[in-house]
Image (tube, rainbow, N blue to C red; front, side, top):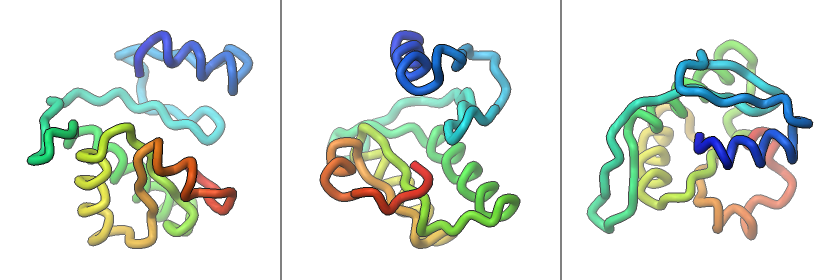
Length: 119
């Protein structure tokens, strides 16, 4: 996560306790999971961005939530700023975890309401 963005999130939601670094192992902080991911940013056929390595990290996290914590996939929402990433993640989740909602950040404001437990 961008250092400035992480600072804003940390101050706004975690009372300054959230830290971010490239070598931080996967950790859970409240309902926030930080997992460093390397990968290549690509463009889909519509020129939107996607990073498959980030997408695979999302798939792993959702699988862990379902298998180890009994989280119902229908209560999980994945947000991304890029339509290409949303499309790629949605297509992968349709096979493994149907029911997970995947939206762009802009769409989420009007679609989600308050029924998502995990975002």
